[in-house]
Amino acid sequence: KAGVTQTPRYLIKTRGQQVTLSCSPISGHRSVSWYQQTPGQGLQFLFEYFSETQRNKGNFPGRFSGRQFSNSRSEMNVSTLELGDSALYLCASSPWTGRPGELFFGEGSRLTVL
Amino acid sequence: QKEVEQDPGPLSVPEGAIVSLNCTYSNSAFQYFMWYRQYSRKGPELLMYTYSSGNKEDGRFTAQVDKSSKYISLFIRDSQPSDSATYLCAMSVNAGGTSYGKLTFGQGTILTVHP
Image 1 (cartoon, helix red, strand yellow):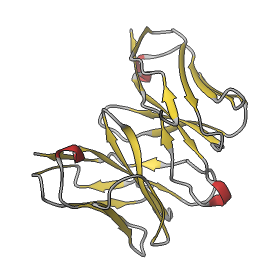
Image 2: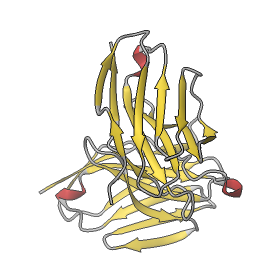
Image 3: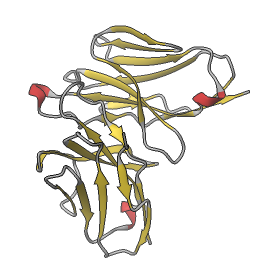
């Protein structure tokens, strides 16, 4: 069974640009969550999607947005990039049943903002 | 003050040592407690999962939860160089089944086990 796939793995952007990151969950998993990981703040929850609906949102500005498609694949977008947005963005999937918090993470998309 | 505080480390121990990793939390609504392990340049992977006070053992790993003290621990026995990784405690509320993916993580502890 294939794991969670995130693309692109690495990208470099400049301030003011926007970026779109993609996540394909494990087959059969209907929930996708996104996290930002930085050395200073650690892993922080961005948002969670289930059945194409945002179910929960973390404390991030409106520049951070996401969506989920009918095949459960998800994208997140960051507009007007700032230097502080440099981070590892992790996507995680779960079946939305069973054990809450049991997440399967991808390897992440590492964003560098110059 | 953060909802979840994790002893920062880093920790460096010899092979075979017993390792103790700890987190405290302030939100009494947390119901589910996890330890994730993250190797360098990889995503976190679930290591231990508990939802009640007490101990849970899985091989060389023991997870301990004390809800009255708002304290969780992970013990690693007979540590191996392959255990070298970042260990993250994580907690979830999931009130009414409204969230399966919203976790609050500790800062992580970098563990190095040297031969």
